[in-house]
Image (cartoon, rainbow, N blue to C red):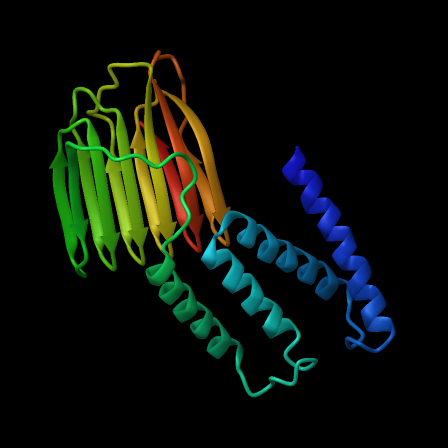
Length: 237
């Protein structure tokens, strides 16, 4: 609830500032749609800074530049130029500073780890209790066949990733999947009997669910993470 209150508070304050600024000549006279879009984008900038999400912050700022290009006298920059520059800035800063991951940091061993950095399809079986999968500019398919699955870390950038959990077994009460998806799609196939806790955030993307989660098992799968300019899809099978 507190996050929603902050959003609406900033939203109405920004709307008031834009209306006043447009009427006294600081900004050109703008319509209600521009005011609403500006408020949402400024909120996205603030939220991105708060969560240290580079993609959200930079792209929201880029869309603001596109909206106010005349007022800022940058008509020579086309929208595509601004968006491409925003993409390059996002990638560059992400490489330099990394992306923010919530939660405690720890050092763990005995991971079933792999990385796909090519343009083709990578297809593998994973059987350890801890899984790490990174995919860049390609397509990765992973079949989790662990009889004691506890944790997975999934990172997908500019590609597609499919993870099948239908042959995985959670021996304890809880297993966790940490997700980071940028400009791509991560598709998870989850046993419909598992309980699923969703702690997922999205910026210029979506989180989609297909099928019905019955939640009849004592096992719980916790999904944590975010998607930026991409989709996370949950298929209950």
